Image 1 (tube, rainbow, N blue to C red):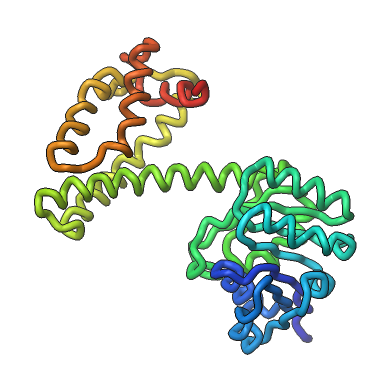
Image 2 (cartoon, rainbow, N blue to C red; image 1 turned 30 degrees about the horizontal axis):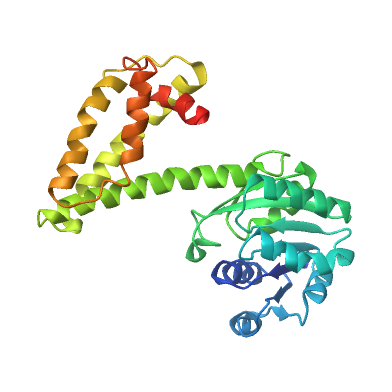
Length: 291
């Protein structure tokens, strides 16, 4: 018995991520049509079996599932507007990085033209696409997600976050906020340690062990945020606010900018002034939401 036919897919946008997405589809056996605003990026894909379309409309017409991975929301709108008449009956999967409100507006537009819409957040770099560890977040109609899940699995683990089209973008950007906060702290720490002549490679194992240990505190922080019970576990906000000045002073002493850490100090000081000196760090979330 022959294997069931794979769903035909179109990929609009052949930047580094778009090429990775298209390559994963080709590798999974999907008839894949690709298109890019500027020519010259499809050679490796066509050599592997993809079809390059001459226009975006031609590309959309070839695919049951239309994956969009472009620069930003504005470019996505520019590319999709002319192909609106061809979208009816198809599923538009927007993997372009954007905001929740942009995702909701695009979903409304796509629906008005007879297309299903899924918004996605790619939690991976191009080299990870199609490999273990790649995670793609999706939101939009559950039926459209379930119908496309097997195809979308070519990219990596597919995780549906609900019907709200903006949910994937919200989670994507929130996870990036956590990542950049971690990287920012690490880079500041490396700048301090390098000022003392310690190689970053020598310091990093200590940093890795420390940050890994600190991740264990997140579930308790989450429970405090959700319950409103901000009881400190021995590390109260007031104590941390008092000690934070030493971190800034030591940074300045070795010639390292405190620009990354000054907002944290202000938040801690604001929390103390608001009466949270005896509370745990979970109390800071409410202050951030009021800012």
